[in-house]
Image (cartoon, rainbow, N blue to C red; front, side, top):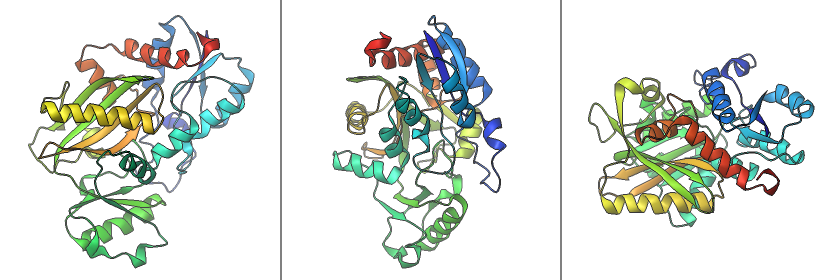
Length: 333
């Protein structure tokens, strides 16, 4: 089968950026990731065509006659629907592709909307409030949950999630909100900070997916107020240890599995996803966010680290995601 690979390279996106935050390129991919995916898909016996992203993708998708697209494109701009850009084009052209559909991707990038949906479904999530440039002057800062965590509402790859994003006092929250509004040009989520364990869950497959792993992120310097921030992810080999399977209480693990499968279902994800939780000191898992377009860097992405710790090879994981996607299309079976 002739499989196209859609992606956005950091180097390509950088040429169109000016006046953006220091972490603006964080969610985009490296050549290392693209080459690893190319190799993994070819190992399944397919011929791979690199399509790129943006305008390059538009040109190549119209000239290359691909049978299927393996999509990891994050999309361009600061729109909350940017991850839906490539899948929307593929649906218009009636080309099958891997991963979630445009509606799911647009919803899940919006942390506020996602939290409303999972909360409605009965999954615990920290209390939160959305703040925009339009309502920032009318906020009662004393009424917000404390300690609070402040982050942009539609970013991925820990953009805007820094060591200083936690605030203990109303004045700190106000200052962080104003700074984040100005820096990221989008609404801000102020979320109750849950002291406890940082856990991420990988899911692969459909109807239902399987919980591929539950991984605990453990700071080398013990701290219940630990933040899995961008600074930590950039130096993860020195600052954290990864534990998979996570050694947590049996009931806590049961709840994490149940909530993960329920979130995947109610948000209508497809093929694979990664879900982040904070587990309180009482053992209650609180949903933070879901990434239906999780990173697939062969060395540093959480989903890949999780698989590696369980003896799952990179090519096998990518092959399982690809197989799950192909099965959804009768003409690709």
